[in-house]
Length: 247
Image (tube, rainbow, N blue to C red; front, side, top):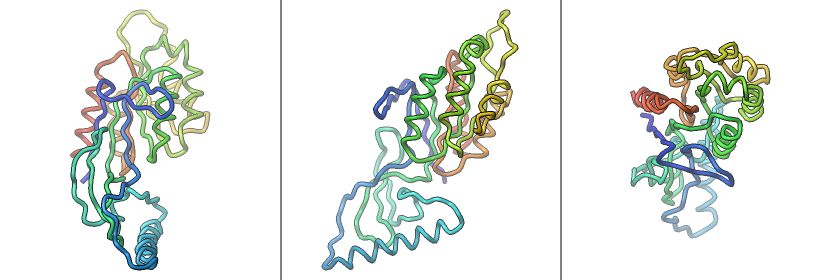
């Protein structure tokens, strides 16, 4: 069963060397040794490590990557609490290793409610999230047609430059509160510009449909990010995606 996390921008502010306009969930973390295993020889340490490598190699034989936080490398898993970012925290042993470790599971999936809406904030969010393992599935709702006219080229260039090849970007229609604003440049234009830069971007007019697309594609270790501003309904959408993932 997938364990999930919803990070609210109002509740969490996390950064790695720079500011982030929103909350970040780390899907994996380096394990901390809680209880070292006693060994009478170097072989007592080397053999379990070799066994762990053999197991990891078997799991990756089908082309799937395996991180040290992958649950399939672990045994005697017991949940002992929650990290400061809200992820389930476990004690466990690696297969063939008697030491007890503390950490999280790569199989945990995160949903992140983020305020990033302009090039600077999008840059901070993507750089921070890419400091941790895991694919990014991004729903970016432009915060108006006017901003797309003013900063559309820079936004497109930012996504095209910073998205990883495996990341996915879906762009619903901009938030619109009525009026006579020029609507000639919309999310379809932005998606086309990002795709022209070589990255996976798609316009999905309805944000509920866009969110459902990301939920359907999500796999263990992914981070789903809902990005945008000037629309409180985005936080409601993030909560709904979390509920959908939880099944």
